[in-house]
Length: 400
Image (cartoon, rainbow, N blue to C red):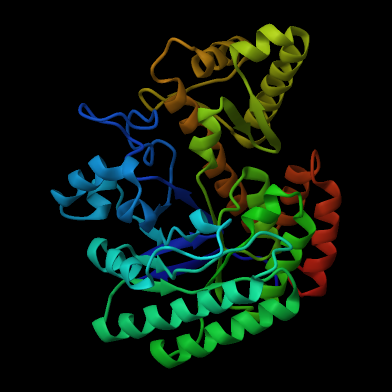
């Protein structure tokens, strides 16, 4: 099964995959009456974003989002509020309960939020788990019960928002069981086959360094559902994204573009995030200069080989050509501690890099060079994981 670019329909909208759903928290763009998270404006257009993921949890209980919710009540739709007319997915917010034994929100409340705000696809209320937890079965049972409850009401209300069931498991046996239970529910209430599925409980694996298990999970689900659309939740660093796509995922989501920006990290294709700040410069000047030299050298290499470019993120204006002096100014632009736009600039830069990786993946697939592309991106940090992924994917008839 050779990797292909596919067009997936979400109601009346379509998305070419593989692709990235950009995670956004309601209210992160500020206004004259409230402080946001540092964004000056919605960066979707200037970063070529094609899909968004918002969180129902923000609409229910997140106190930081109250002002944005009030503003949304006065507008016509979620898409208009976000200045976005492409595919919008709404997650349930259950990841907030990863470390808890119960989920303190009601699945029908989540469905009510889906119905009220009308995302193109709404995620069922699942209950993810960290590795080696003792109550995996009870969490999966809760996920399946919520799936059944939401699909029953979804069918009764004849909702237009499409529901996305979620499977969990860190081994093949658990995944097969969970997937079959989800399939039974979808077949009963949706009147058709399971054509779209989400994979949860991957983010804890990524955070704990369990990249090989991530490979096992994604390739296993792809082998069981060779034609389905597969979304991987919270697996959206630039490097994890390439790995997920190679293993058979159609899409991932990430909020790290803005979260890492707040902690002064910037991304560059094929590299882990780099922290650039006055503290690093003053504490370890020699090491900091070396990091910046590598950053600039790699950016110039990408510019010359792949057409990678940068922008003035305050205006969205492209920077026509890159050189070392231009990059020096650009780094100052990202790190200026006196500029109110510094978090916005870093966040837009990171999001631009993530979307550049999506476009680069599409180009490599069209040229029949996707494996070489992913290998090149992962070679610096995850070369052994890539070799394992190549063997595993081939054994599952993926990318062979």
